[in-house]
Length: 376
Image 1 (cartoon, one colour):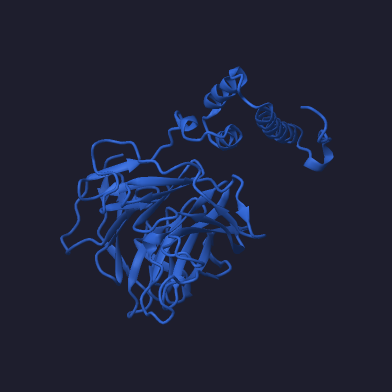
Image 2 (cartoon, helix red, strand yellow):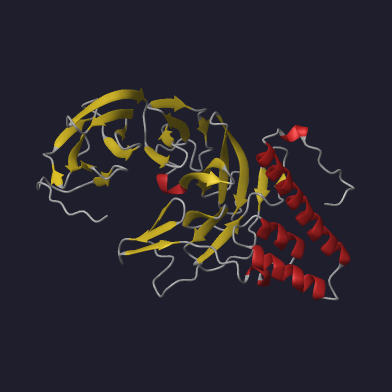
């Protein structure tokens, strides 16, 4: 709902955000204080403010985690406050001390990532739950710069956190492969059971330069500015494995994003999780969407294509079209057809088992499932 209001002129605004109920506005004008304005029954309250805990700390940013809870992330730690709208009072409830370079927050998982260390490669995940700050396992990312450099080798723009295939994942762009000079790579860390963090996937880019990350329909897109193309990765498809880490190549050759006449790979690009791109210079905001209509023209191995499509939402009609073409093509190998239909049967059987469990409320082990030689 559009809202019109006026604020006192106190200088430039660093950040401004409403809470989820849109009745409290938080405004940051300095690196030590956040101001608040209440909106109730069409009226605007006088401004009230809250400084960060330490006078020497610098507020890097703030996050509304509920309608009445706000977090300050400073260069000296995290501070959780309760905002009492009726009294126009802000009270600290929790705090966590540590040196912080930058932070990322995923609202869907309530996970806050804090970068610390001299070169910024130590990551501390914080799980926010019911007014508490729960530390998860800290992990380190191998720095890409010189060993003795004092500059940050991991910047905020080179990381992303989000949900992919139902699990929280941290994506980290490494501008130089740790093993060779074969180009940049994206390392995927999976947060398991809101406890441990493990390196599980590596996406091989095979090129260098400036990149941006997006996630659409559980697919990871790596946008390459120099070539004005995007690489698409699916971490659920088969890949090489060294026993614990899967190494992925792009699903298809690099493709450009389709859009209007604006420069879609501008140096002014800023990406926001999961699929938002903003170019502030020209005043444009885009939502990235997945168009599967012509995917069969660039992915030629039918079994691989069907596996890919079955992992996508809204792909049923395209799968039917591919199957129709396969059955009508006399040159199609029977082995390929068998592989495709085996895959479909396996997925459908899994779906039926889950449906029966949901309807009966029985544990999976109590259900009799077909053996490998039995058709479904």
